[in-house]
Length: 149
Image 1 (cartoon, rainbow, N blue to C red):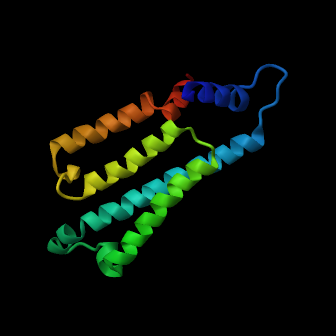
Image 2: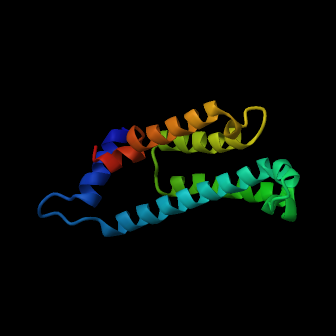
């Protein structure tokens, strides 16, 4: 199903058949929603990472936006960005597999930043992060668009 949707996207928007017109409004909507998704997900990851680093940054005398503004407002902001990222995928009509990947991405931000796992402090975390990035670019439904599959 995902492969069919990707092929449909590639054929109708990126490379329409001879004599057919590309659906520019659909392409623009998809682009804006996808850009919004990545922006909201990155903002979620940034706030979550700052929340996880409050204690370490205080010990190192570093400035951390979450320690200055408070943890509760930062947590509310992170939840809002996480919900917004999922809502943007829903508005774009993303297939369920993309929702699963997006959810896993948000969970990965959490386990990267918070104990007991706190992947950012281990070699295993670095390997998991690299494997996820490689998988996303090469094997995931959105990544397959980059390869033209």
